[in-house]
Image: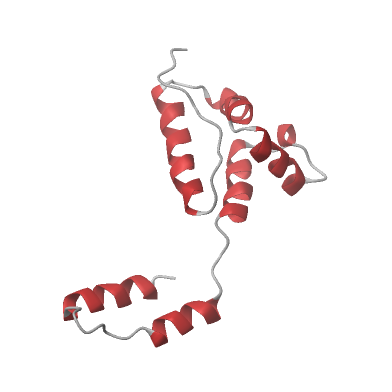
Length: 116
């Protein structure tokens, strides 16, 4: 199994998790990691703080008892929590057009706020 590059430990928060997960999947693809080895490769490379967090989130199960997809789902749920509907509505409803802002930029901003 040839490896291309190295999978670094995860040290970030929030949005950085999405990018890290993309890089993990690209690493698996580039290095031709077989499906049955993906979990082991990820757990040895994710870093001690991420591994400890994962063990806490999975309790009473352990990481070796769940699939790699479940591991990614649990960590994604922790690092990227679902935003509060009330807060999202407040941000959308309180957004006003800035003096130098074009109508198209304002519309794009409203569309972005409406996706949450």
